[in-house]
Amino acid sequence: MAHYRVFIFSMLTCAALLASEGFCRAAAHPEQPQEASPRQSETPEQPRRLLTADGELSFLLPGPDWSMQSSTAATVFQRPDGSIVLLRQTHKLFPQHKNAKSVPILFKNALCRQSRCDISPIPERFATTSGPDVFRASISGDGGPERKVYLVQLDTVYFAVEQAGVPERDLLALLSSAIHEQASQPEPDSSPKLYAEPLRMPLPQRLESGKLLATPQELSTFSWWILAAQAAALLALAMLGLRLMIPDRQAPPREAETDSPYPVRITKNYVLVHDAFNISDAQGNLYRITSNDPALLLKAGLLLFAAAKITAAAAAGVSGVSPEMNAFLAALPGYALILALSGILTAMTYKRSFSMKSVRAGAEILTITPGLSPSGRRVFHVYDSTDKLISVIEQETRILSLARRRWRLKDTAGNTHIEMIEDNDKPALARKLFGHCWGLLRSSYLIQERYGAMGEMRPDSISQSYTIYMSFSATDHRVVAAMAAVIYLVTPDRWHPWFT
Image (tube, rainbow, N blue to C red; front, side, top):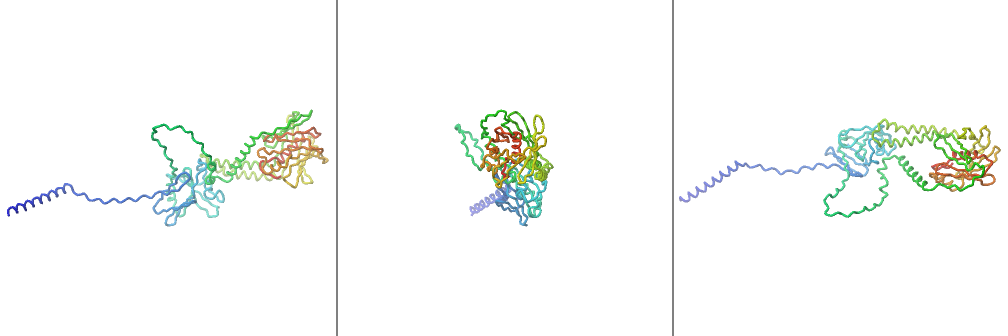
């Protein structure tokens, strides 16, 4: 019995010791509360991305209630209340150095295709803390009510923006978040090479025509008249290069007759404001025939218009040009057109008159004035230094306008002394269809008298320089040279198609 009591007491003592040890351990090291399993954080909304020609254009939406719908032509940001922001298709600037001075042109190209709308003269610029440059303007005259539009320029791309029901603060917040990310290029391998690679010559790359031509997206940044001027300039340079590769015509060897003033050389003088030809004969005499140009004001206005257009387009791509200068350049083509239109009346009313003088003596030798013909032909009267009528220059007109040009020199009684006619039908037709093509198709004339051929007049170079070869004739060579100058001033070889 005593053994059982000792056993039970020992068990109770051990239990008490174990309990006290656990309590002390708990007091010394209190149990840490179990942490709740961390929740996965919500992933932030990724920026909306628009693809461009050389990378991506990213936007960070201002709030979670915005949604985006994109197509090939436009991108729409929309909220549940119906307010929207419309982004037109992005364009790549061409050339890339265009800057804020080209904003009015870019507005028209992006929104109204260069016509049928009016842009505010000076688009207002917004100062954004970050991101692109934002410009605001008003558009009217495109078939709808006046509306406020925005143009955003970021690096080398630009896009047009319109909004409905969106506060301007939210719109600027959306546009300020735009980031243009260039397309990533693979980094070169910089690991050391254990052996030297053999030197290899690069293979010639195949020339692709698609890389030489601008894309329609790039061409949309230019007005149609700029593209037409560039095409005409390239065609003219190609024709000029072709002409320079072709040798000039060599005059056939001719024996100069004794005491003959022929050959007579006629050269166009491009220095003087008025039209003029310098004339020199085989005896060393120098003459100059000048003519007033009734279409001078018209030509000056058209030339000023083209120069103003080109200057305005060039100034739009140069930084540092003041808005006042841009406004002046934009208004200059209009004044040039007014000048050209005012010259139409004088070009249609007044007719050419000519005066031939001796260069050394300075005395007037011949005076040529326009006259009237009962048959309706173009007639010029030739007077000597004493104002006596000595000859009549008459152009023959035919029903078929593609025929060769033909002129006659008559005396006061109406008898034909000399006739000048283009030497060939086919070149005459080609000149009227394609122009003279930088001198490739300069006209030449046969000189005939009543009893048969007696000479010719041939071009010497790409400029207006001609030589008259004739056998000795009773007709004064100065009158013949004046007749040739009248022909080339009244019916010149033109650079464009013509049928007169």
